Length: 262
Image (cartoon, rainbow, N blue to C red; front, top):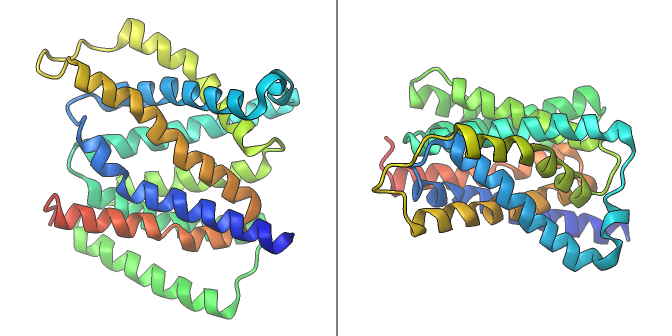
């Protein structure tokens, strides 16, 4: 049973990291839209997509499933803020031709996960994992030198997502329920922003195609997060840290091959 859970967690992790690797292509399609507007749409439509998924999965038990201890609300609010700030920086960077910087951030992030795992969760590295960590750290340092700019985008992405993974380890609710509350808690400020503070989109991009892409940005957001939330409950933070190199490797290749960020 334990081995089966491990395999399921591994499959979920592979899915979300491959998905995230290709995500910059999607957000490049709406790069004319301000990053904070994209995040607001991601939160709102992501919450609705997840609600539909839970309705389909839980049926009449939905409200019972969504009941959580009051103390968990604060933890989920913090994790929601962490992931939302990570989304905002990621989208801003992608839409400003900084995919390489995001890939560096997610190259650094596994190192942060491994550091947090050993420091706070007392996870131990095998000798093979230690050698792999040295190689990964060396490669990351080289990429940082190659880009030739202060890695503030990369460090922000790595730290916020590393903290998100750590906080999710402390959440004592089911992964999907936790994700549902994260998006619901962020949904109200997102709606208020779009209704009262968001600037008017230029006429050239204020069309149905743009709004369709913004709508499905919610699905693009939720699908990999479902996988990640499931994986964090089944796998060690150290193993997740190593698997996370899949996403930035794909993003790095996309930045170089398709967008010429050299």
